Length: 95
Image (cartoon, rainbow, N blue to C red; front, side):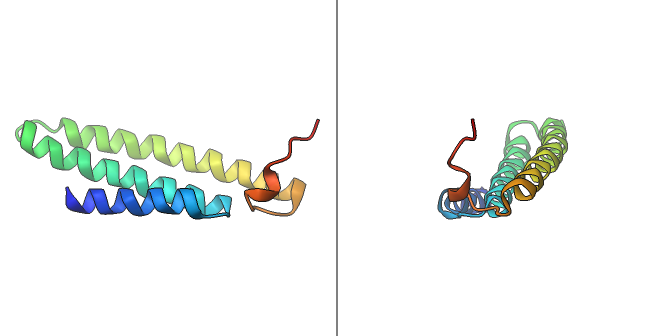
């Protein structure tokens, strides 16, 4: 549980302090992995015979993999258009 809190805190700090969208996506993935660790740890205490926490963790990993694929595709499209992946450069909307 302590490992989960530390990983989530590091991910939250990285997501709020980084300027690169790739680093923000990596920080969000770190936060998702912390949640997965927490799910597995809590399932051990609530129902050790059932594997619901592990199933939810695997499902969360699948959703997280789809999220990172979509996120990196969006970052790649933005890089091709604006030639940067910095968050500050993406503040303006083109219209």
